[in-house]
Image 1 (cartoon, rainbow, N blue to C red):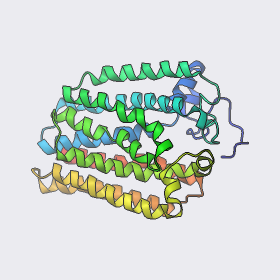
Image 2 (image 1 turned 60 degrees about the vertical axis):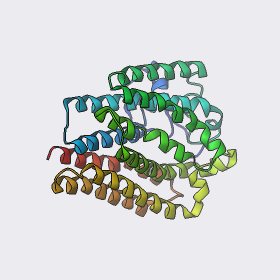
Image 3 (image 1 turned 120 degrees about the vertical axis):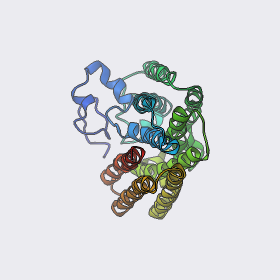
Image 4 (image 1 turned 90 degrees about the horizontal axis):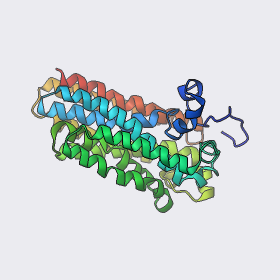
Amino acid sequence: MSGTEQLPEGTVADAVKGNWVDTLAPAWSRPYLRLSRADRPIGTWLLLIPCWWSVLLAALADGEPRLMDLWIVVGCAAGAFLMRGAGCTWNDITDRDFDAQVARTRSRPLPSGQVTTKQAAVWMALQALIAFGILLTFNGLAIGLGILALLPVAVYPFAKRFTWWPQVFLGIAFNWGALLGWAAHSGSLSLTPVILYLGGIWWTLFYDTIYAHQDTEDDALIGVKSTARLFGDNSARWLRGFLVLTLLFVGAATILSTLDRSMLSLVVAFAGVWAMGWHMAWQLTRFDPDSPPILLMLFRSNRNAGLIPVLFFAGAVFL
């Protein structure tokens, strides 16, 4: 999008067109919901999906789906919405000067003057407190992991200032649910959720490198680092590598989770990983680093890529 293109008042450049925030939410709430990216729900999905992977694989591993798991699934969804909102608000507070210099982000609430920094900080704290209330309904290990998750969330917005690999820091933060969801079900951790967590980080490197290609020109002008800028014309090759590593790690976690289950459970669960791989491979066939609309479409399509294993894992649990 060019910097001269006009947007309807208050809307954000990369929001989903006709989203519920812009069309249905009360006018006074819209700047705050935009700070939370409620008009761009893909981030909530990408934060939530590793939680659902881990809860389902934990239930598959011990062969004991429980009623509490239903609350974990719902609680993780609510928590992902709230903590993604709090994290995005924190990101916008720290990046408000950078965002004002980038065409795609200068329409966000802080650089466009829809809210003040103080108002944004209060909104961030409110979301985090409600999320903490949900976290307190889980077991002690999950609560501890949830609190510890604040560290990578706090660090991530600064990563692009000191490393070419800020997507790694995003992956560390966004896939924390792979540990938390397992702990919430099992009350413990093992090698399997750690492997799943690493698989999620590789997946984040895949989809967020695609996303970062939208801003390479502006990022170069203002000195912001990213894997998209680092890889340049070799990005497709790196993306293939991230695809393979994602499948290896998520696939290994899936196999470990089904060691004591039936062969049919293994086949069904692993079919979800295989199908996710085909979706990611399709994304590579469409990848065009010079087309922001295609890049945004591919980035958003990772919701479907991640939900495919969710469906297959759920099927395997109830076989």
